[in-house]
Image (cartoon, rainbow, N blue to C red; front, side):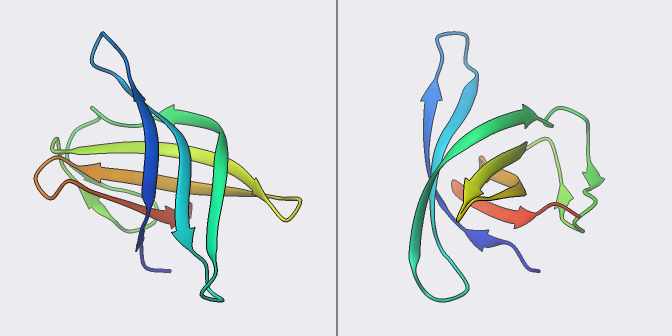
Length: 94
């Protein structure tokens, strides 16, 4: 599946870290979904590489592995933010 744009509410900590808290996206049925992230893992700062979902990332990307629950089912996603484009995107983990 191709990545899709997503709205993100996040916390900017005084040490400069960004913590994703909540996302809003349009699902495959065209409905807007808003969910709280139940966990996240910062996968940034590992250098330029291709992620398991096929996305090419550089040091200009922030990458998180995240989990959330929607309709009583846990979903795992990669959440990406690019400093140059200032766009958040998500894709299911591979």
